[in-house]
Image (tube, rainbow, N blue to C red):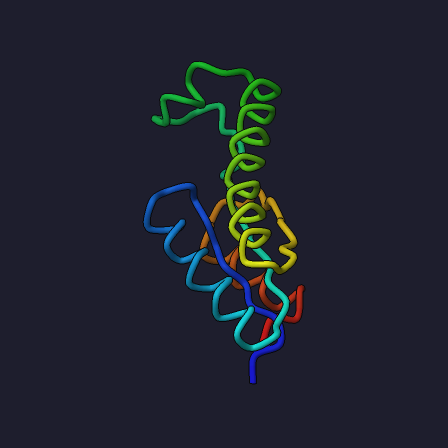
Length: 109
């Protein structure tokens, strides 16, 4: 049935639950699993307090660190389940589109 499952994560408790369920499904189906987290690009004009206080370089470093933390949670859950998990960080204006594009590019099905 499914051979490659993509699970999106934003670091929230709900996304951790989705990771656990997606990874459990992947293990049950002997499928591969990829976790993706999406951050928005830096904007000079914004109401987002993180972007208002940062320079572009500082913002990008901060978002890379946050994304790494989210993906590490996915990898830790997968390791505890006994399967491998590929982690991908995507920067995109529209997170939903980045998730769809990643699923297609990675061949998740």
